[in-house]
Image (cartoon, rainbow, N blue to C red; front, side, top):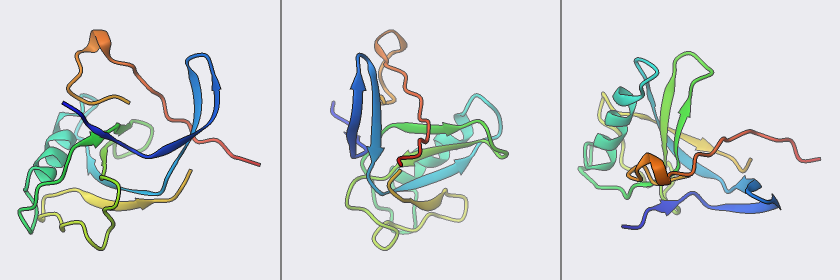
Length: 126
């Protein structure tokens, strides 16, 4: 099973360490009720599974993003390449927020013992 990934360009590589610039994309973002991340993930999965105003299914992409720094806590799915705010189906009332992210992983079904964890850190390019 293949999962589409967010588009990026590798700016620097040093062993297992990469500095990436992600292309502009749209996120579907849901608030979390606690650190386990189940409530937000379920809202997002429902949205891409056709739980939206058009009953349209959307492909799953990687990575799944968790923001644990801000209140409220959030989980986000990167929308597939080519989908924009203009052509994405609108969420139902209880659905996620859609957010455009300007230019600035792992599939979720991988078992933990083969999963490569990633950390996203925003860096300033001078």
